[in-house]
Image 1 (spheres, one colour):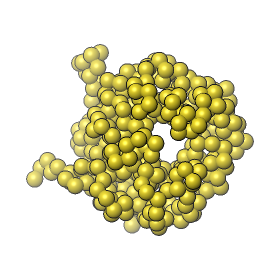
Image 2 (cartoon, one colour):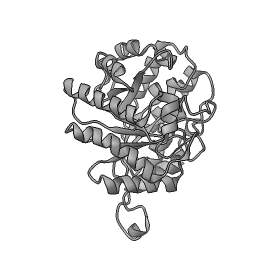
Image 3 (cartoon, one colour):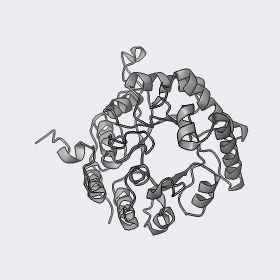
Length: 337
């Protein structure tokens, strides 16, 4: 049965007018692409034991809401992340909906080779951390070792016929070991990762700035997005934001005002970083709240917000504890009762 379209706001995104030079809302995108992370990063942050069938249930329900892309699983060491031990079964069991991209993530060559056999979409991702301490503690690696691994991955991508893909800079704004990450250091680490792609003749499709532990504020987001744009004007910037300290949607707004048109988010706010040292804190920004923010400003997402609120309730039922999202409890405000 065709999915009913959610009636979007009649407003138009304001992209020109007075105040542009003073940082006004002159660069709002007309359309935003939201990647749904609940099934991957969300379940990855939960205790092990969620049935595979329930994970598939959430993915299939999300696909009915107009979300264009769903990250389904991480191909990582199941001893370290036991929540992802059933990734092959998840990939095999999903009934895929036409028009939806079903993606995944990995951190090394072994993970990529497993992902390549899964039937899921393979973004040729290059990733690394801006925080050397976070990298050492959570990946047992140095910046040099990290780059060596990413170059090997990039060579594997070429062997498998993959072209351009995203760069992910984790802990781009701060980490619980080093505190704030200076813009200059974030740019240095991003340049290393961009260099891996460019050396292979496959420049990045976008540069993801990831607020891995929810350390960022809107001023930091603006500063780093602008710095990355200045350094690499031809590569779109994307944002992966967390709501750990309640600033997630404010940070998304800062990105929108600069024209960022690609975001990661998670239904109900499910998720977080299992290595951030604060497992009880809120996780990723809620997909439905980001979609509502866009809708209220006339920015198209293609998402049926009321349908997504129902899926947030499903997600809460599956994990069996309250999720941090607010909108799926309150409902969409009726502006014309």
